Length: 214
Image 1 (cartoon, rainbow, N blue to C red):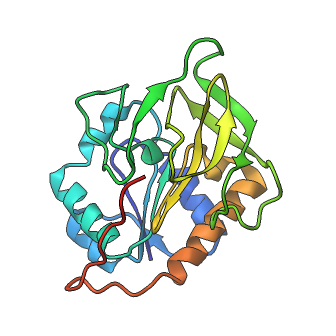
Image 2: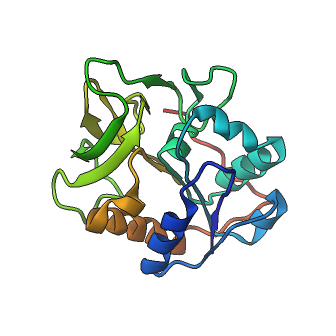
């Protein structure tokens, strides 16, 4: 069962439809305690990074505890940026800090925001991208981007080169919108659903130590 977070910044209707097509069971929790019945978490999002302030401390604590005990987490677009330490778009709004680094504004040497289809360039073996052909095209809409770090498994060039897909242990993120990326996007969501179903059991009394951040 996937918990799809609604913090007022997500394109939930499209994400729900895409998850349903992928055969996923999902729900939208009304409070952080409801994450107890989830097997995975999806954090969607569009718009300004300041919207993540709506994910209050009780939510953050439960999300981090769930990730620490092995629960898969997928961030989409703004949700992926939220996995990092923060963003220059809202310097006083902290990210989850699961991945090191800050998101930056795409420089105006290109048209900003970056809207439309662009290539993914796989840079490392990836569980999310394993069944995709080389350099699939996916759909973007964003003005800020995540840095390329050790957790990056795919990049895109639009002005600078930035992280497009990140993976570290049970933490996953995509900068584009898989729910709007046709067959390639659905294949990525199916991969996450498969990861969710095969994830290791969680034992809250014996948390899995987090790896060194990338």
